[in-house]
Structure formats: structure tokens, C-alpha cells
Length: 98
Ligand SMILES: [Zn+2]
Image (cartoon, rainbow, N blue to C red; front, side, top):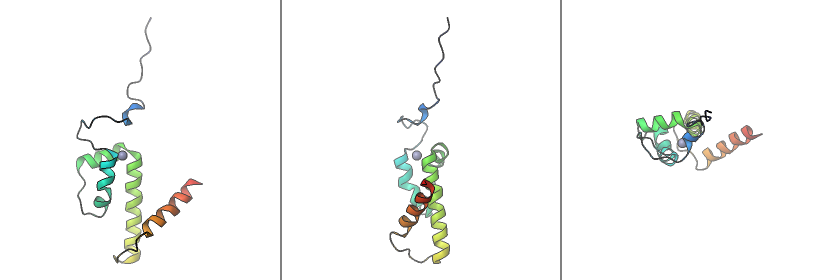
């Protein structure tokens, strides 16, 4: 009698695994995410790969990028008041949540 084959890589690929293929963790990704968006840091291969594999980080990247682009257009590259980005994010998440 054949035993059923367990799906090895179905949902398990996102658990805490060692950084084998030069991949980075979500924390590493989020650490550089803002700098990459601000173009203070160029995205590494590992960073780009992580965004391909990790939807939450990709969504945060796209969201932050979109917000910053909007703000830059609106404010003509002036200094942004602190807290403005956060309040916009809260509004976006509010709308998405309900
Ligand atoms: Zn991630």
C-alpha cells in the first residue's frame, strides 16, 4: 500500500528558515526599505528577491513608494511635516479594512 505523499513545500516556505540563498529576513528588508524608496540605498539582489517572495513586504514597499511619490508631487520636495505619512497610511488602512 502506498503512503500518501506529503506536500513538502505547500505552506511551509515562509517559516523561519536559515538564510541559505542569500535571502534576507523581513526585518532586514524593512530596515532598508525606506532607504531604497528614498534612493539612499540601492536595492540588493537579496532585497529584490525578498520582495518577490514576501507579499507583506512587497505591499509595504509599494504602499510607501506610492505615498512618497504623492507627497513629493504635492509638496514639491519640501520637508514633510512629521506624522503626515503615518496619518495617510492610517487612512488608507482604514479604507482597506472595511
Ligand atoms: Zn518579508
